[in-house]
Length: 180
Image (cartoon, rainbow, N blue to C red; front, top):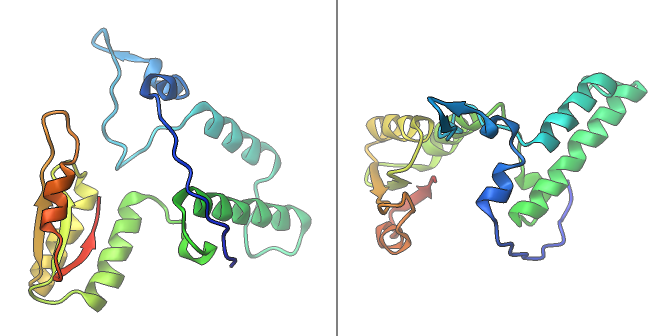
């Protein structure tokens, strides 16, 4: 793995412009624009991702990290190049800090079981928010039942936004993990 040159870049995001990149969001339900709020279970993909996945399956599909043939080696190179891109996007110091999982639920369960069972004890605190999908609630509830840690929930405002001052107020020396 390698160190990443870190440069913080801020970008103003225009929700309507971004929405146009997601073909499924042009659909409607009951004569109303589709609003999809279940991304914790199945995230929708922008057209660019759909096109890249199609290209991969048509021209590059092979096992990664296992083959000694050209197609597999190229698939591995492509896969690993994404790790560097993600590391830069998330502003992490080293590509070894980026792992890929099957999805959000799988990733959160890995953290809850591996980190939680190793480092969280009775009286410690885990912080989530009121806007979380079940995949980011249930594993922490189960961990609290197992270990005796306390689950704290940060509030959101009427627009569904996290109230940052109240989140900060929940953080203290007993906080072991914040999962948003």
